[in-house]
Image 1 (cartoon, rainbow, N blue to C red):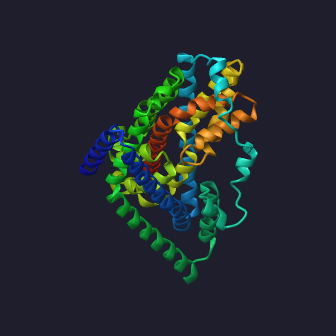
Image 2 (cartoon, one colour):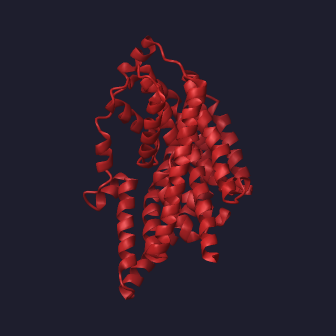
Image 3 (cartoon, rainbow, N blue to C red):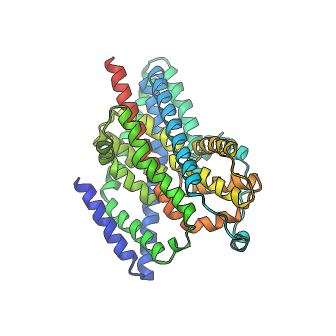
Length: 399
């Protein structure tokens, strides 16, 4: 509770500093915010790899397979629910088309990436061991970690296997010590993040919003955050207020970093120390969820795709919505948990079908706000899945 109060105080202080409009102060806030984001990204890569490898190596293939199955099931259910909420709100609010002149003004500003979705999937398969670490390719790292962890679990017990596992666990303990040190200094980072956002709002970024479209995207995130995910927790007999209260440091961190991958160290530490999730569950479920559990991204892909296609003259029928709901869920699962990853993935999808991607340029000014809310929702969903799987495993063990 004391930590949350300090973080909220830092949030208010940063907002006040950002509204002062001092150029040197805005520059300093950008610098400090970038430093903190890079430090968390630095810790996120080894956190993911070590967590998955050590869990597979020590937890046992049968247990990890059961946990992975539950994690995947709840991930797909919550992600599909988020996309469905977005589709329902799109139908209810019915965002109108933009003027041809407004779209034309953005045509020269946007260039769609040349990558196809097949290229995106191929990028997951690593060509060597070093490149995924250098590029921070989370999906490739997970693939390597799964293979290494499963390989270790299949090795016969002996001094060699024991030594390797102990080294990995020691590195993991050292990593979590560094994470706790960084969290201790985090109020300074929150001041910088808050000042950065406040300066952007004061500069008129939010004023460029597109009304109903933004209402659908943000409204869908709010419904998913406060209604749908709590219902999943209640169905498992868990108190949503308690779970959210315990996981609030991670949710707040996600709000400002706009990266669930960069927030992962905080999410894992908070789940273990505040929520009380078992170590073997939290360190297995959360790295997987960070990569594939993208509720906010699924809703953004669906709503934005429908909005862009509608402006391109495509009739938004029920079969069209159903098809793109499926596409949005699959795409979100394959999206990396990094800032703006969802935006550029949507841009690639729209480019692939010949939709007017110039509209994405009009969305870009408000995407900072959307990305913040989406990332907080993603981490909240990760936390819910972790709590549900931990409760399920507890029942399985006692049974």
